[in-house]
Length: 251
Image 1 (cartoon, rainbow, N blue to C red):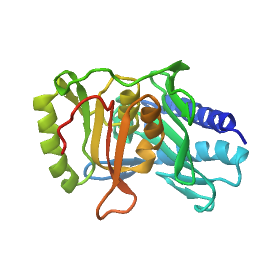
Image 2 (cartoon, rainbow, N blue to C red):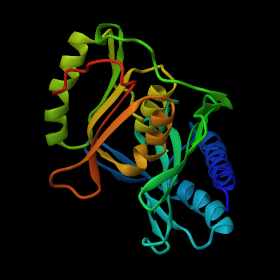
Image 3 (cartoon, rainbow, N blue to C red):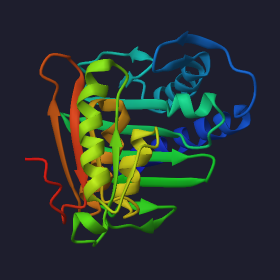
Image 4 (cartoon, rainbow, N blue to C red):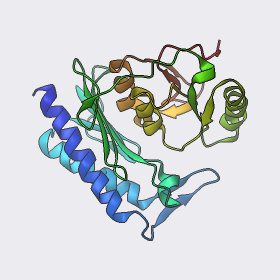
């Protein structure tokens, strides 16, 4: 199977899921969990099931590693990394800023990545060895050379520890960057870095499915991604994705 075929699977799955989400946007939603700083929707599960059905119909021996659960043998050579709704809280509050994120990993290496914003019909795509694209057109990271001219997104996760660690960073960026943003969808943040809208995206606790597709996008578009495992929480990471052209002063 070629990378082109894998990319087409990701594109088809992302657009099908995006159409499903667009059709349900603004409608009554069933809440599975209403946590202090997060919401889990029944729609998340249905959207992942739709993505899974498209992928596994074409690639039945592949594994699924998704926010809404695992399917298949997780030691399989090919593993699809899925976030069916990245920005669920935005979606719930009728804020049209969320995305579907799908990546394919083989032997620890991301081969294919797709991020789809169904409300703006913006589709980022990349396969290893080919250009990063937005709606079919090549993209590149921002050329801005200084933090004082940069726009930075800082993500703050869902517990008090990450909030306490994230807010001083947010304050630092507010003081030193041109503008600082906190928009609620990690996959769109990292996609925006890849196409030069943002100069950096920083978060101290994130899951792989939030950023897997975006890692390859940013690196292929000429940027830099530093992702480190969390010291005590398995499957969590800190991430700095940037143009690679500015000094963020994080050392």
